[in-house]
Image (cartoon, rainbow, N blue to C red):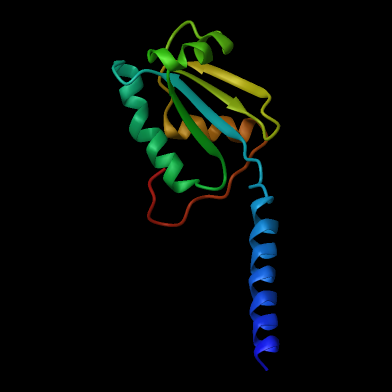
Length: 132
């Protein structure tokens, strides 16, 4: 009897381990991404913050948003990689990470959504109650 209880417990532990291990290898689906390269102290960049925050909340899981402060020492390589000359610069990427389009300066929420549509991404309209 003791042996069968130990065996059942061992099987349960092992099955739990394999379920966790299998889930660890799963990747999240790739999303198109909007990268905003700017600086926390830049006036136009500060105006982009609420726009990006609202989009990130409303379109979570639909497209990704990444902000990179290019004035921070650790992000200088990113600024060089993307050849940033002026800020803010927004770069739109497809799910494979290829650049689709870029813009320099402030970009409104509606202009961002309009550009996504022009690029072939017709995202679902957020739930009622959200401003567009």
